[in-house]
Length: 298
Image 1 (cartoon, one colour):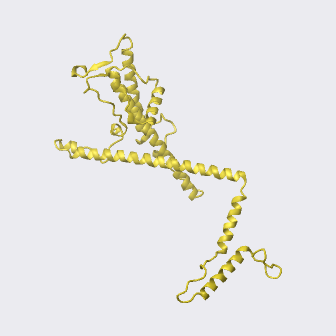
Image 2 (cartoon, helix red, strand yellow):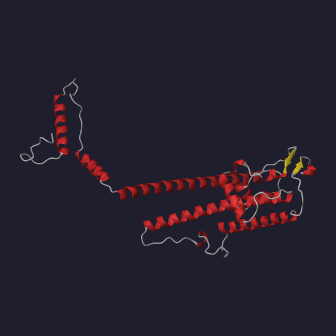
Image 3 (cartoon, helix red, strand yellow):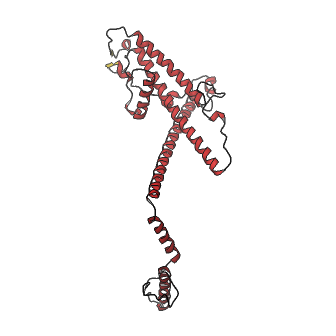
């Protein structure tokens, strides 16, 4: 129809205009020929010429893109996927920490209501427990208790549980290598206790660092969003929420950095205890690594 249209005799019309006119005439004829009790001879179809023009224009723009534009679009899509993945991971970590804090609150409330304690002890806990008191609940490692078995190797008491997670195990090994501590020290009674306590503190330190990095990332994101929505203005973050410029400089108010410093000091104490125990047992020619299940050999 478009090829046979006489453009010199009639005014110039596009394919969309001809389609629109054609379907409009067909619809009008179908309504006229349809009487009571009769079905229309053709389906009433409405053609949107403006929508068709926009569709063809967008399709032409899509096919006329250069190679650089296609690569840039793919790069932006990859960055969007990475941002969404990081956001999901942060949300998951936030939910896990919230669950742990809620569980600690419930346990503290249960201890308060437990009968048989003095009134002072029931009123002593605060509304929210401190992080250093919850270190064993949040990131404690449940080492195997083998005292009920017949015979066992004392080194099995230092074995990490299988459900700990590969990331946490690698983080503990990395911190031990930074402190120049062997991953498998001599399994004496004193070394087993201090080595397990040390790894508990190192795991708590790692989790606090991850939580602090997430908080810093969220603060920077909020600052960029505020500056983008308010041009010419700068979001001032209170010093208590910002990391200190110098690690040795003490902060005026106790924050997450103070908690990390405390955990690092605790970890250093355990490191010294483990090293001292190793030095004490270094001159022994043989160490028996098998203990019995009786109380006198525990």
